Length: 352
Ligand code: IPM
Ligand code: MG
Image (cartoon, rainbow, N blue to C red; front, top):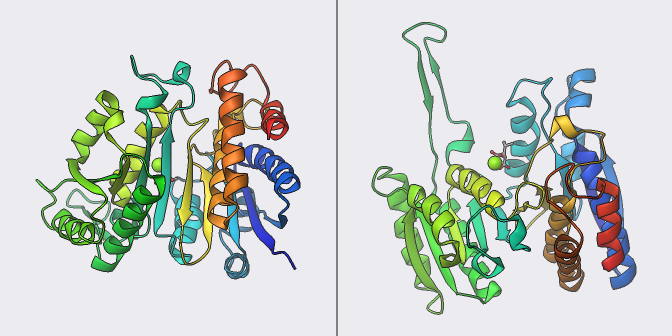
């Protein structure tokens, strides 16, 4: 009997449910065309549930999420809730609990009209950022001393384990092999200042590189990486970096590929359960207006299909997104696309 994928859907906050709905529309169309079966289970975690009941991520939900084939997420974050509560309590907690140690963020420009960089076109912007997703500054290690006094001290530590670095770097080399483009991995770090953390990263990087003689290596400090992403994005194929730097450079990556409307990411546990999301957030001011761009969520869906093993369906969804972007949309920004959220979802489903 053919496998039936069990997909957990967390629409979440703000425009999250609207964009997830369009992703699921495309999933439905893809399953018809590529003959795979799936079942979705929706979870109402997010700001609404927290404000009503105080529950953030109930243990029962977490237990269920540990049994599905993949998680599809809209967005987490709400202006009514203090920053950090939902982000740490839901998004980061899931990344950690499910040991999704890779945050894979492709940076691909589908249409040069939407690139803010002068004289750059589709051939210049096509790389992937492999962001470590379970350690570094995100561990929550640290604390306050003498809180709320003028002698206050705040400490936030970056945790870097050999094992955590190694599995992330290995994934990056595999990614370069699979992409089969420039066959290059750039380590993005700060070896001139963070001489403990990135010393370890660098040693592990060159150790793993020996297992991949077909892949070239390169190193750039994080500040220089930002500069090159603007000046010569064509240099990059795969960039591997830690959690914090990866967070920062992927917002830059998102904007050079056309903005938050198109940027997607996968929180991947190659041996476990992965979670896919548009990286743009909940965009509260556009909530309920049917104007938000669902393409980032649809690209996240394509990544999900790829990781589930439905490669053909994944490529077809990506091709359809590209076609809609190039042939239909006036802009990738909310409210300026020339189509509503639902219409963009319809177009992608139609072209599939
Ligand atoms: C991201 C986001 C999150 C992060 C926030 C919302 C916690 O910025 O996915 O890039 O910092 O990882
Ligand atoms: Mg971010």
